Image (tube, rainbow, N blue to C red; front, top):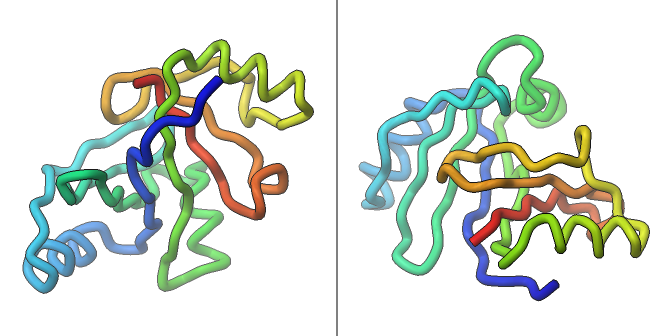
Length: 135
């Protein structure tokens, strides 16, 4: 396994429309249309930075993991970082063999970019939730 480029930094927000306006109107970012991802419990918007992206996340439904994050951080904040890997299954198997914890059932789910993703436990990665996305 080799860690690839930084795909995005995700920021949980309590109000996606307001956060989108801030990134678009105040910072001059190019933003996508909101995309609901029911399997992940979020609605997302991406801000294109050319060499990477910022993902703005808003809870979708009461069981959203972002809702729990926002209860602890009502103003929002950095939620996770996403790195690309060449082969997500090989990466998962190597990480698990080394003792890292893969969240959920350990099987990749399709993410916002239409590619398989996995999340790794923050306690295993310096307190940061890590998403891996197959490149």
